[in-house]
Image (tube, rainbow, N blue to C red; front, side):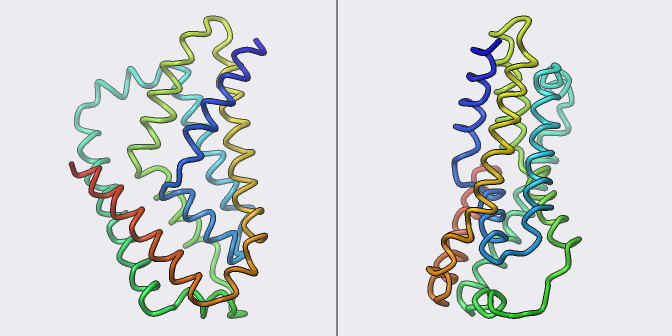
Length: 199
C-alpha cells in the first residue's frame, strides 16, 4: 500500500510541476495575493475529482465518446488563445504592474471562472489525470485507492506551495518590468498549448 501511495505521489507531482496554463494562473494570483486559497482549492479539488474518475475507470468511458475530443480540443484552444492575447496585451501595456499595486480588489467569481476554465477546458489535464494516472493505477491491483490518494496529496501540496509560496517572489515583482516578463511568458505558454491542441 505504501509503495502505491508513494508512486502515486511522485507521478502526480511529476505531471503537475511542468509549467502550464493552470500553474501560470495560480502563480499570478499568488503574486497578486488575490483569492489565493479559493484558487488553490479549486485547482486541487478539480484534480482530485479527475484523478478519482481516472482510477475508477472513467478513461474507458471517455474513449467511447468520440465527439468529446474535438469539442474539448478546439474549445480549449480558443479559450487559451484568448487568454494568451489578454496576457500579451498586459505585457505590452504593463497593466498587471498597475493592478499589482492597486488597492481595488478584483472579484472572486471571475477569478474562479477563469481557474475552472483553465482546468476543465484543457484536454492535457484529462490526459494526465484521467488517462495516464488512471491507467498506471492498474499496476497496483488492490491498492488503486492508495495510488490515487498519493496523486491527490501531491496536487494539494503543489498548488498550496505555488499559490502561497509566490509571495516570496514579491520583491522581484515590485518592478513593472518583472510583471511584463511574466505576462509575456504566460502569453507564450498559453499560445503554445493552444497551438499544440489544434495540431
